[in-house]
Image (cartoon, rainbow, N blue to C red; front, side):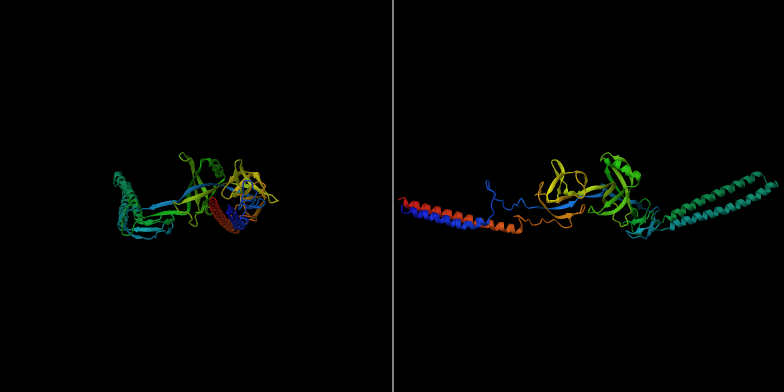
Length: 446
């Protein structure tokens, strides 16, 4: 029984050692949010700190209304140049990808045979013209003799018929000459339209025929160029109203979907709706001065159908949606926000048109909604223009309270490490005290 006070003393020393070890870490660690306690949760900002937000000012502006579609660029005219006569290709006078004018000689076929046929037709006509001249002289003689009753009238009529026959033969010879001249001209293969040549399909020295399906080269007219695209049939009333006042302006968008590659006009709306897709086809024409469009290319088009005059516009990022509909956070003069319901008539990726609930000049929140609530205190870090995206990536500023900034994160890690060390020391002290108490009780029992 004399050992019992010693055991009590040892347990007390262990408890004191654990308390001394744990006390600095407990003081440096942030208080935890307990079930009954009122301490702050680690990293939670103070409820009185303002919420950092970005803001924008509602403005009045003219907003164009577009109809978007996807189309295909097509050459205004496309011609497959083929030979019209058979023969040997003796020369090619164009280069692939060359812009050629109308009537430009692209290639030449050996004209020897066709030149001979033309010369033969000319000679035949000359022969018949000589016979016609002689027949006319004989007719004049017969007519004089018939006036003196030297010959009968039948002979005069026969000679007159001979003259008419030879005149018809001369006219037929002229037709043969014209045909031979046309065939001879086909030996020069010319460009039927002005445009750009494609890849050559045949080389010099080959025998070409009119029945060939490959042709010599394809010429496409790409200045100007046309674009065919589809729009939903629900847009037909607006399209017909717009076309009644004149050709509707249309833009061909670039690969990024924001820049305008070229601007043109709608030329025609197809006379029927495609029943399988419920869309109507339109054809637009673009100048294509800088060759931004190419035949066969897929093109995003934007057709201007209307313009809303002096409406209230806000950034699309400011419009929030909830169970009751769309709303925005208005920044008041006392730096608090007021949640207000609004009605949006039109919206795109950048701007939204507010039909009801907002006036021009009011300031509204565009980012920082995670901690935002009605009547909350805010701090406006920057104000952006309507329709203009932020120039730099948004970086959330450092908070004034005990937020998780870099220093706070470092302190939290340090406090957690100290707490872990204290817990280990306390557990070690408890085990040591328990073992000491157990050994003392064993010794006192006998």
